[in-house]
Length: 466
Image (cartoon, rainbow, N blue to C red; front, side, top):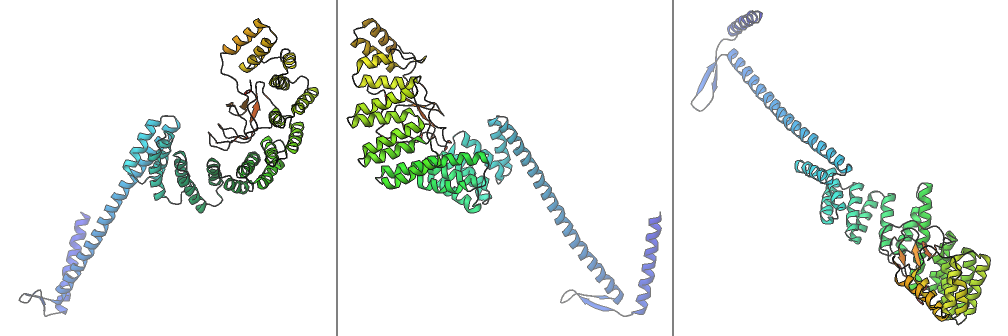
């Protein structure tokens, strides 16, 4: 009711005002809308019409703006709902993956990407899953797409580098890691990955340069120790590579560098001996190896000395070394076994028999031990015992024990080398059949498996002559 009365009042006031101003402004104004059409309006009517048109235009503009805002708000709300759904699928995918439900995680990430193909996090995780399933082309495709969306993402670039490395596209992986370092030059992870690739490619000089840089990084004490031991192995490999290329002076420098960092690093000592042998200084090499054995007590050094002295035609010298070592450690079964084998090799049948027949044997004796004993019994005309030993050798149930074993991965090898071919760790081989604990602690794993490692030819298998 109040609104009706107010409306009537306002209309009455408007009519009175219109009449008042109409009397004050008599006459008319001709308003043409075309060449032949025109309207006559009083000045007051013209003013009112103008005001009405202005109000209409304002109303239309405001309406258009509000309509635009409404459409934009609707689109924004729709995008927000889609983003919320994508994020929910992404979170569920991560939860499924961490719960080992890989297939479900893949479906969830794929649904998220169907809603938003530019969702970089889903691309990253889905690519990681494909890599874990060895589908490297798809992993590379997804991670490259993610990197195109987030060019400055270190995480995405590192994932792409891992895809390329696992796909054995090493040069591309190196380039990707270099791109990461352009974004973040102090990224330790990228430097480590690049170094590991150089190790895998046996680019030892490049790996050594990076390793020196990593030694200056702000790492924990444990990581510093691991990197320091890895530095020893890489330094040794640089020297070994120079020795292979016929550059003994440079090789000597790196071998000594490795020994300076680790006094018990056997491969470098062996390398120094090999340099002297290549230079024709066999006596000097033998003297150095004897000193190394006195310092390390490592049986592998004796294997090299045995081959060296026999090549020099001086079997008495290696017999002296063995006998002196046993006098210092009379309970050492390893030394006694190899001395007995040396006696057998030199046709010193009685000495070999006297030593090996009284030897305290390990529970699982190597078949070669039984072969030696069988031959000794044959020469002693003890046929029944010889047959018994041959039965043991031929009926050996387990695999034949070879002379060297890696302490880290337990892989066995018929030849000694400075680095395990299987796990890629340096200074880990010990002599069998009794485990020789005289070697130093193994160096940190450098990463790639099935590492190529070239043995020094002078260290032959101790069982080959049986």
